[in-house]
Length: 461
Image 1: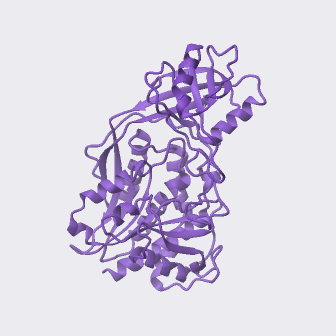
Image 2: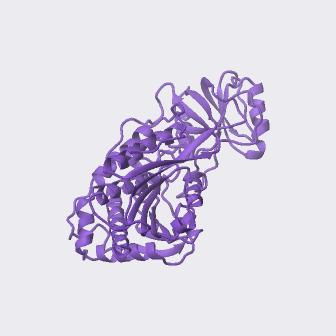
Image 3: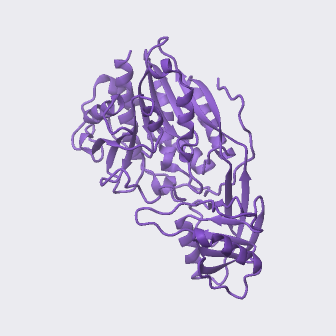
């Protein structure tokens, strides 16, 4: 049974995710078949076959359709993240694990939702945005959009009153610009980010630096900015509705399922983070790592091991590894000493073509039990040429464990030039199943981590 004591039960978060989601093609290969992109056929042992034969990316996709497609953005501490936590806990319960939700406090969130009144904007991406905490909150306004150009030198039309003003944002100009827009009768302000250099795209943001602005002020993502301006180029009027909401006194949760081994024996953990950033449905970051963890938990539920198995999904990773750091801080030293390896999975299924490299990312840059086990599994699966590392890199939940001396690493499909070379939909409204998920890469990721984790669990018994 799941322990859900002391948890927040707040109202639903404004989301705005398209209801219909295109389904990527599921892979179809046998245990001994050459995998896509691999250079050699696999040479699996009998233990690998137990794992590989049970895994299904189609099952994983069903979980992803709930998390990314139905729930959408899962912002740390809000009701959407809690809905995801309850769903994940329910799956682990069903598989027979001792499941708990581990609550911890997180900062307030300020969110917005854009509604296209006339239905002229694409509906296949998320229209959630960030709200300025210093703007008008918990309100809904509606009006035609007026583009005034850069906030540093706006060109004001005569009909600002009753409109929603959009402008290219500059932090220094923000307070004076918002005050001027309100004085001219605008009912809301939409601030547009500067474009980032490809393949990066700017994320939605909650504009700072304002104090008691009398109108709502929101911050868009780069792709939302482009689509609104493209629409304004071909229509005479683009009426929008924007709603803002403050979410305060928030509690986020880690979700941890455990099957105990021998008393005081070794621990092997597979993990991912299930939250996402503002405006992003988080299909790949990190819905993919989340559903990998859920699917491996299902398969391992039928495979006995003497080692204790833990399957963990971290909350509020996007705010600075808050969930995993909270968890590690609660571990007594004798518990930390029991860990043999933590396999963190963050962004393991992108469909972006250049993401041909599977990176073994270590916070220290050094090899450890986790990286060694995945390297060995890659060799058995025929993927040794695609694996690079260990390479020094933190910025995911493996860092929380390595900071206290626990063998851990993060595993991820990324561009071949560097692990920082991430897909364009990263942290954007386009991080959807249809636009940013490959079931082939997800299947290979599940096989690599599953075979590696089983090998460590057997060796640790």
